[in-house]
Image 1 (cartoon, rainbow, N blue to C red):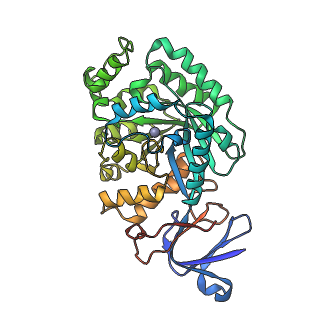
Image 2 (cartoon, rainbow, N blue to C red; image 1 turned 30 degrees about the vertical axis):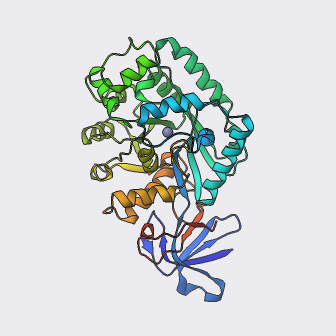
Length: 393
Ligand SMILES: [Zn+2]
């Protein structure tokens, strides 16, 4: 048993408590949360500052870790995607594996306990099989047109079948993005997950301004990109609506929906998604947004709509680190009026719920095994401090 006390104990599921002890057993399961006065002070480890549960990284691409530092910043998404495609196979298997091992270790050290991770293929599975971090793998597919739809379905199923069996780990299929998937593929994935009771989808959404333009009237930079790639896009019919409001019709309402980025999502889009879906989550990766587009979503708009928000790092192709704390600090810098106690659930309990891991993760509650993070900050808002989080359990 360890008894750990701090000035601020952020349970997340309940109020922040002061002068409180968290009692952990040898498996790091929480056995009690009680006032410090109930314990002999000699038996308590006092940690000045803040205690909170381990972080959930709701969006990552572990398999792209070898791209760290390879792609220039602020090129815009279209140039970024071209770069990813161009260098995706430029590195040896050994180089890629070493980068994946190091990236996971960075997440563990930084207090991350679970990850919603995108896999287009099996290259990260050797690491996931070790069971050091809890993963929900979103097996991501795209078809770019009807000619590739059947092949994409097969690839997705093959990758899903190859997921290593680790207790607590889960997986589902997901479409990559609205511009890269046909309505047929969207609908097939949605039905596939639903029939098998799989979690749901994580879709890259409205990351770049011209995505909406493509769906409104089939103009803009995405069309130029598609022509440049010499893809047949004659099948694509603009809906006259935003991208999100178009593909909502293709999704099963009972599936969990996780929309990633949302930089150009309007209040009307948010309302439409909330009306159509039963479990809607909005994922933000601010450091990647600054890296690629140099634009951030308007977080307050989401809060005003009662949105369930989560936080991700995206991949090392578009980030200098895989740190949820750093993502929170970026949000703090750009949205200083959002209180820490509003932001912390984005990085913990909401992320755990979004991935289906709230049974054990996301909050400090008796019976959970959520990890325990200590931020030795004097400030009542620890995001204003420069000290790094320490992982205690
Ligand atoms: Zn991503």
